Image (cartoon, rainbow, N blue to C red; front, side):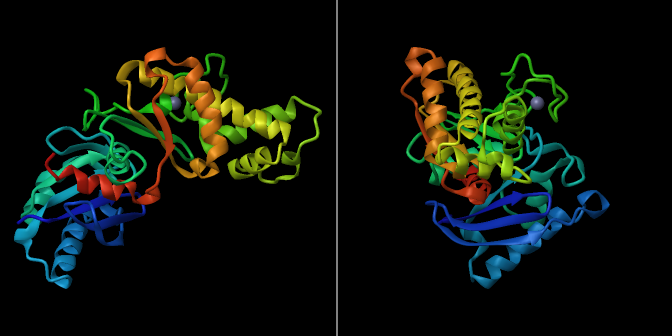
Length: 313
Ligand SMILES: [Zn+2]
């Protein structure tokens, strides 16, 4: 009986590996360093060795392993080919074939953000649903979209790239992607700080935010909770643009649930309230009642979702 699988989340500094039961229970997790030297040529071999070692240590026969799911920070084609991973140093490489040959196990590969969405839907904030949109608010804004249990990868591997949905038509600064007006420019940790600084510069109002050096997203939410007007306004701007972007997504895929993750989501209820109010205002009426909730798996979402890739529906 194939009751065991691995979920592997490849990041720029570490590779997170989870040993799972196929029913979703995490048995063990650990990390190995991502050896990026020589264009990342050691990474797959290191993963294969770590998986073998883990099976040996836990006295698990390979026959019990359903497969290895792996999330990578780059575009992935359906056959497991990764099309350039800048963070790892990889060019075009078929991760499924290479890791499969080394381990003798079935391997499935997914984009890390999409895989994180799968993880949140399997065992996290989206549990019990099968159409979900994940917005991850960190240094940037990432995400993943799942419709009827299937991740939306798109024809260029850019499906679910919600951070670069254009929302600010009069933005003057340039986004990391080269465009102007992306959601990421206003709804990321860096984005809310940038907006708050603009508000501070354009106002004489007293604000506790003026005492922070450096000003952080956490400080803005903390002060907004205490009633600081400029901080509240900055939160409202984030909520407005995120609500608009979510309404756009709803207009295309109409998910049952929106899950908000990433470091910024630690702000909790005040963030959800700001988003919800705006989403409900801007969205087409039929999608109005979609659930909006927080992610629960944190940095483990990618590991969970990768494991989910190898489990048949
Ligand atoms: Zn952008």
